[in-house]
Length: 116
Image 1 (cartoon, rainbow, N blue to C red):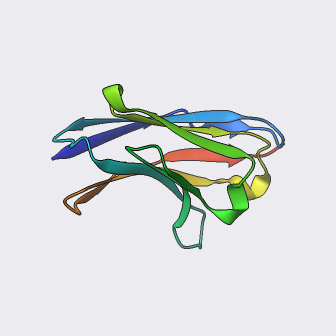
Image 2 (image 1 turned 90 degrees about the horizontal axis):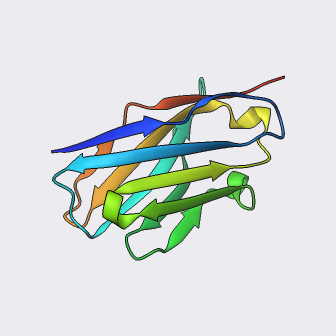
């Protein structure tokens, strides 16, 4: 089993920044992809960003140029630096890890609210 603990969400004004963290523990293999998804009210969950253990990244179109994903392989932790936040970034952000075996796990989610 894998446990994911997210932190860093909160309320921020438009144009502000937040940094999310997700620490994974348990049966983590060294080869995996870790990432962030988000879900706004009445909308489907969508990809925000993902990073492989080799460092390859992929971003959702709506966050390119504003968000940066990174990871610390030794600590099994993934980060999401969010800059120039917009009200439409308001959502619950979920950490996700998928192992090379194909097994995937979700965190419980952390609320990000962008509002003045």
